[in-house]
Length: 168
Image 1 (tube, rainbow, N blue to C red):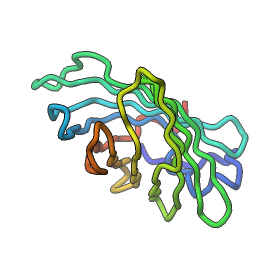
Image 2: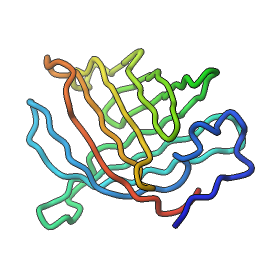
Image 3: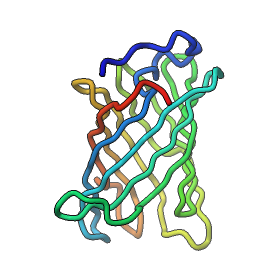
Image 4: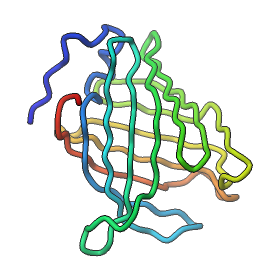
């Protein structure tokens, strides 16, 4: 389904308009401290008329047949566009971590790095992240590097998602 720009979208959100909608797909996870696996993901990115996007991501572990085994992670957050192509992404995770990312937007692309990480005393050690989002052949592709559990910043997650609807 082709994406049509929501005419009610605030002007400030124009650089991020391509993110709006419901996305579904699959990806890969890995890190030196965990076993590699495949996951399913659903993202809903919406707005309520203010110049901020709401972000809801849910992931599930997949078995070898591609069936969902169990929930993995949930993140909720907000994309906050700033002047001159800058953007903030504030995320809270079901694992007890809150991240503040800062970065830049380009045409159908966003690169972000953590500006701050807060975690509960019971959350796993996590100190930094880097994310890349892009619209490639009408699909949302993204990748995340992280520094955690005493490891340096390195590849952790990547996925390719297909737009299911414009905005729910």
